[in-house]
Picture (cartoon, one colour):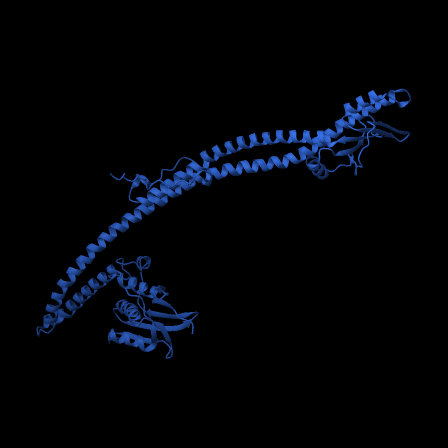
Length: 475
């Protein structure tokens, strides 16, 4: 028995949520629900209006029955005619009252129950009509209601009718079912139209955006996954164009990053082999430095210095390419003595016109990784000496600041060019003329590893100042 292979799935296709959980399904349900709610808000006043119209029609029929009673001799009619008139009205009692005469009454001669407050159509409020209509639909079938209203012929004449609630309740229920079906049909039609409109105008374009995003995420190197914007001028069209530009920029950046990674591997291999070659050349140059030949003695220091710089460059390149800087291990450092040790390692003052100034306070202590801070200050001070080949001043100052310590390394050289400032902390772009830029890039990385930052404070014809900000733990 062989197992069936799993069904293939397209990773570029986003999973679709089921039915009602989808955006279009929710819109359809909400549209129907809101349409039904609107129908309910329309239905309640309509039901109240239907009830009042029902009563007004009975008042009009009762007025006609009263006219028949007035036309009869002595205001008396036979029992058969009285029953016929009441059946035509649909009530149990009809009364007409005038100011100048007594009331005329038609009755089916049956005992009526005690009735409550009458329904006066001339003073009925809309909210009372809604409440009374609901009460009629929910009241027992054998209840009665007493209705008062003006005569259609004479507003001064009042007509009173006692009506059973069962016929009115049945009529209201029939009316309610009609409104319900009409509202349901309108809701479905409106919901379908809104659903199709939103599906065409909104949901399908959004799904297209999602497909492009998912496909680009799965294969960013594939140019076919970049969305092709439509000619729409609305927000969807704007989103498509912005997504296309973002995908193009990101694809270009990823391609460049991959090429730089490959180039970095190649440079690391070349630097490794070149460092081995330079090590042999360094041995030869050291021997030349011990020669008694005056010409050799004159050239040897420059040769040794060049080879040392080449070896240092190879070592920095390899270290930066590996990106294996360890995490800082802070310890307590007396900064003034620490700065003097860095300057002494660089041979300052060296007797070539460079004047050394240590302006760090005597009692200033800070928490930092000593090796990392040494490398940072060594790089900054060495750069300062290289910026002043004819001599000048190097000054290191420090002060406590809010939540940390600020250290400044300043020189009196000619300053940095605009191009050097633009790419100051970018590796292999070079900070100063002839530099690689690796030193400042590594120095900033080390300081940021402490949670601080290294920045160019100022530069110009009067000199350059770098500022180090190091946060300190609370005492």
